Image 1 (cartoon, rainbow, N blue to C red):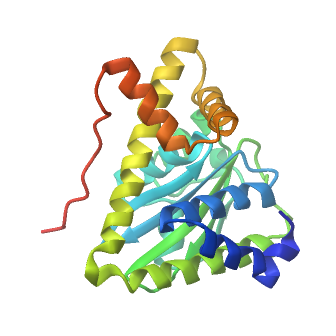
Image 2: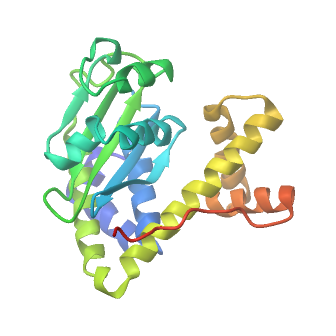
Length: 242
């Protein structure tokens, strides 16, 4: 994917028309973001609805666990970006003094730099596009024009999805996203245990198998867990806030 495809919007419009759900569309955006940022090794898209943050889609193993660490302490560059809203670039986690023990945790996970771009700012479903890289200063001096445009396109898709909220369709989309994430995480654990490999290597194995068989990643992971345990994987439920 080229930067021109993002700027003129034609490719994005086609994705929106061709994908079957909001989740699939956002996954396509996450894949595109990683392609546009060669320094990054993982990316995730966080949405916060009614105060509840969720990584609805991701690529690579780092994004989900680093996002979850931030959700657990209710602060971090990803949450700060979607709530302020502002673009946040962390050049070196080892030099970062904000956000409690999150920077040390990120560095221990092999991530030294990150970039968070706000999405759907000042709406009741705000979000952030988060990119993570191993080396320090991976995004320093990078041309972020195409990534900013991509984030703007995601804003339009989320705004469209918000119109469905009163009919429960939007909540159903989030539930499906949580289901997919949980199933993929369970399958990652199985592959890591069987192959004695890292989460990144396990994710690569699953993605390759998904592409080779031409089936969605969540479908492949569901089959893997079902074949291994004899029953469908357990998944979290999206509960309404009291």
